Image (cartoon, rainbow, N blue to C red; front, side, top):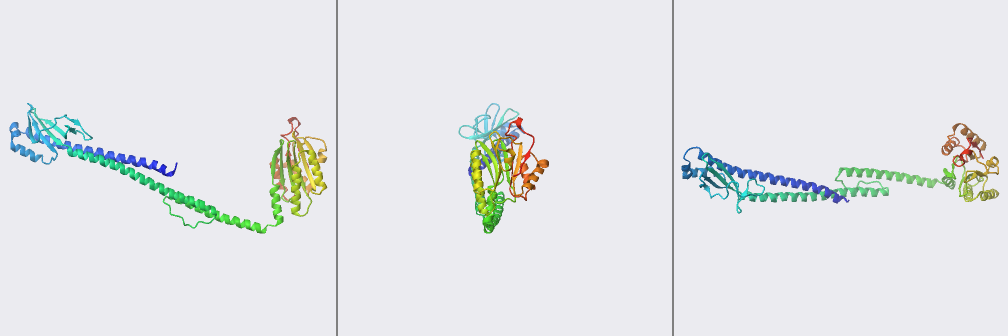
Length: 446
């Protein structure tokens, strides 16, 4: 849902309910007060007449006396809406004291509107009050309610006006809120979009209506300035590296990326290989993962120009990885030796059952030409200092081994960081049958 309809649906009902409540309070409260005022006039008139007529004997004379009528007129002169004041004797004879003859008796007519006790004879509206005297006579008063009806209509109009104004205020308020909020949100979005160019903020953005949006804008501005500083620093570093990098440095960096750490599972055999810190660009490894064979081969090329050495290492890796069988691999390795592309090679090749079917380097003498099942874990390396590296591997195997390929290789690289070359490990524990799994571990260094 969009922001403007959401605010309208939230604000409009609130103001509308408040408008209706205020209108109801005005109408019902004013109607009650108006009704009470009319009843007080009627009750006051009948009470005065009843007290006057019952205070002394001579009831008939008082009723017919012009002096009595004048006195009643003076007493009831403040009752502006008094329409009729009369006395009905016990025999049913009605004598009008003031005004005209009564149009309604007590309880006659139909109740009208919200004014309590308001009754109509079909033409006019009245409020009627009667009191019985001790001699059985009835004193009655009739108050004209036409003015009250007009006031009641005005109350309805005022209530309707309150509701209409509430709805109008709700629409205006919702529109202003959505306008201000959209304006602030758009300003924050513009700051975020402008932050992509990496330029520091100049503080030339608009003021915000809402405090939360201003705080968000300040956070974006801070992030924008930090990104600009970081981007400038990165560009300076990259420019410095580009200006200071030589061909040899580029070759070394590319070699490190090409022959980064690798950990794979090939035909159920867990393999890992690590490049030692002092390795030259002529050191390479190749992981074979073919349908029929798998293996790991470490190698090095003759020393010389670094660019040519790295190119030879890449050629050797591609040739070995593309071999689909052990026979093809054997032929390619012989050709690499023959044309002087590789100087040393060491590695193991196994089939789908985890059985070693070919070995190179020192492994050639260990496994011979026949197929064998190696020990559960085998760690080997290729280095210019074979004897020292062999001693490190043997010590590690005896005292520090965790029996996990990745953990062991990382630990060995940490304690042999000054050497050059590569180290690798293969774990056959999940590849060979359980009844043939050995407990011994063998370490060989090529």
